[in-house]
Image (cartoon, rainbow over all chains, first blue to last red; front, side, top):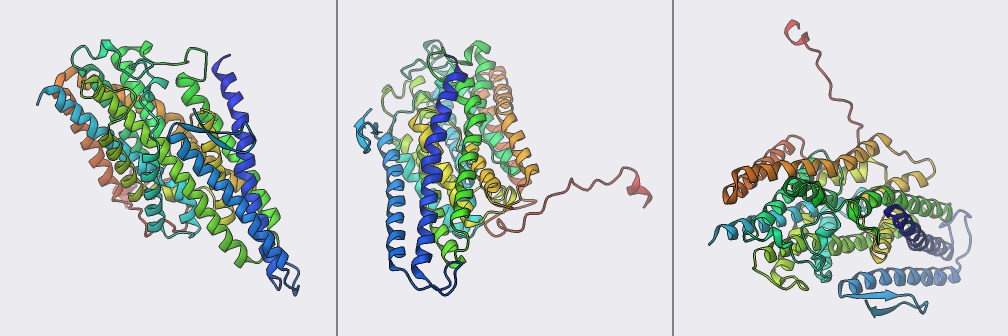
Length: 99
Length: 408
């Protein structure tokens, strides 16, 4: 296989991972913001004069925690690869293994 | 002190100088969007980015000794320099490295003067390729690898440069579009505040990743020079002082901030709003991390620029200044060959004079060019005071028609 083949093979994987993490996490974050506004009620979202929905606030913070976990995964990845380890997704749940 | 030791010292100083330009050239990649949306005050942004680069540089203890192998053949696969180049005490190798580094720095400074975010990795590789062609001929360059993996100038430099901005742009465009869809009708006090925090977090991740990626390149180059001259023999470790010096150089460069480039990326391409900034930096962070996980070498500059463009394409009704984007792409295309030409010229100059004298002359030429470009930049200073001023499409410099001067 030539360089172009290797590059395209890597490229679609990067695109896929990029879409999941780079667009997916911001999407969750945006949903969290929307949920927060819904939870606050009042004029926070387009339908004016709505009552507050505590459940919205709870969902919002759950979403924010999921995003933070995603970021933590990113930092773990940087640190692990720096120390000659790598993240393995073999068991779905990420684990740190030797390279 | 022998002649070789003095040349080695020049190489180390020049390499740290390159690391420094690498830092301030790339501050924009992480922080341009946060500065443009006022999520962070300019000085705070560069301080945060510098600190994270410093930390990142120390985290990258992975041996980066074979960094030059991707493009030139001056090392064996285990990182030791080729024996034919160290026969005279390492001076042949040192001259190639020195000339290559000068090529990289000169090009980095020139693109900074023009406010263009070009790739520091391309500048370094370009300089090394040029110096190697001059010193060892065309066969000294690893053009295409051996076909067993992604390698060589084509595989490690050119193909990623073409693909990565497109990938980052697509991811950022999708992210921006989704964010705007989801938050339609939500009060601005929720969106603006929330997205500013998201932006700061994602930009920090990019800074950290940058420190781990880019500082090691210089560490590898310095260690190669040390091994070539017999000052260091271990090919599995990098001396601690090299690590500390490189980490400090890149962090200091980042803190100084390449304001001219920050301005172009943050204000010139797209008018960035906090949601776009979040989408762009998340895309950059995800693409950089995913690529290094898959061994897909790329330039943070190309990724960051692609992301910011994508965030302009993805926002309904946003204006993208394609003319500015076009200038950047032009700069990317000529970065590698231009740095190569400077690297080659420097090698010929150093080789013609020969020995210590040659190395000193190249170094003085570098200092003169750097001083010239710095002084030139003072004519239209860009600093943290005016980095966020309204962007005015600079019209072609008003030309005074020849001959009218005397008659009027």
